[in-house]
Amino acid sequence: MRPGIDRAVGRTWVISLVMIIALLVNVTYVQGFAAQDLRDDSLNARQYEDRNKIDRGPIVADGQRLAWSEPVDGGEKYRRRYKQGTVFSPVTGYFSPFSQTGLENAANHVLDGTDPRLATTSFVDKLLGKHVPGGTVEATVDVAAQQAAYEALQASGARRAAAVALDAKTGAILVLASTPSYDANDVSVLDGEQAQRVFARLNAQPSKPLLDKATNELFPPGSTFKTVVAASAVAAGGDAETRVRAGRSYRPPGAGQAINNDAGDIGGECDLPSIPLISAYAQSCNTTFAYMGAQRPGNDAVGERAAEFGFGKPIKIEPGMRSAASSFPSTDQPSLSALGSIGQGSTVATPLQMAMVAAAVQNDGEVMRPYLISRLTAADGQEVGRGTPERLARALTSDQAAQMRELMEAVVTEGTGKSLRGTSVLGGKTGTADVEGAAYNDRWFIGFGPRSDARYAVAVMTEASGYGIESGPIAAKILDALG
Image (cartoon, rainbow, N blue to C red):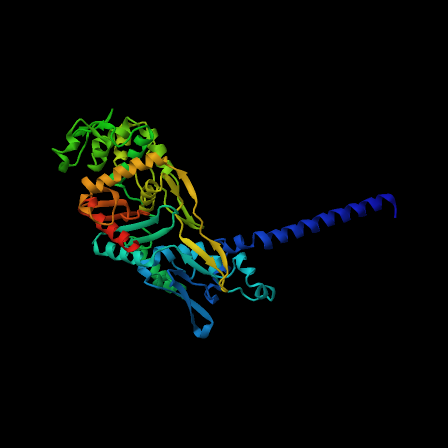
């Protein structure tokens, strides 16, 4: 051939080789790295076609099955079943014809056998092209405590309610209860139209039973937020005996309206001009904590401490499971900061977040990531994953946390929570948040216990008339069940 033709042929071969290599790289990427993401993409309708033909693995806790698959149509299809669906739905979630939530979603690929970690335990099946059996997900929840929490919330008569209990040292979620709830068995059906009718009925209810009140609904935390404000004062150099401003009324700079103490405080310590921080916290003096948020240590200090506890961003529980983001207002308006610092106004929180605040105080100031998966095992019993404690932040030093424990214990021994003396609750904080235009309050209690070995933190919110202390006995029942 002529030299010009030789060069043209050579260039063609080079271009062809580059294109072949690029194609191989793309195929490798799509099949080896992006395959799972493409299968899970919400625009990929094929992922829902055969989902009921898979025998998913179980979700268990304390040796009991919370979710499992049952064969139907002669074994051609499988339907998910749930133990006490209304009790455990915040934990398991549901598996419907076109979606999944909770642990059903977080551990979806372990349960359906497509997780790469399972292939090594079922290598022969994988080699022969057979479907790898689904694995088992062990949840961290304490079954007895979860049942006790749900029953207590139901018995409270609250329009909405939630409870969370954490292992303060590890972050393991031991209780995740919500009312009103739904039965996961009702939505985990084979027929898509039937599932849509159930979803439509549930979504039409004002109380939104599908929405987990413990992690995904925000409420004004009332005086339980004073724990964060007190922590900011302690972090700024104060201690339990530091004298702080009190008084019957406080008008923030530039505010048109004063913030007052509760009518029941008239004539008590909160009326005095100056009292120890431990007394102001135990008696829940609004004026003290409104002043702290508005002036000293101020909005920046309270906001910084709130962020260390976890406010301001969603809390990742497991892959695909996040809580709503709790918030405290960042503002240069003292009136807004004062209101937010007594847990009203723009300050909102999930029960999970407030449980994390109590847990950090108990855990020497360390904030642990809450998690719900204890262990993952393949069908042959081989462990392929485990929940690992992870520190998110240090909100307080060990000495500062000890000061805060002293404050929380004073609430129970001599303050607004003294009716809990003699129960399993060692320390805590009550909170009553007014709901504008409503005949009910958001009644909170956060705390830790049991008294003999205080390793658990708990948060309870019940929505009804009355005060935060009325949620305290529910916290005690949960701690009793855990103890």
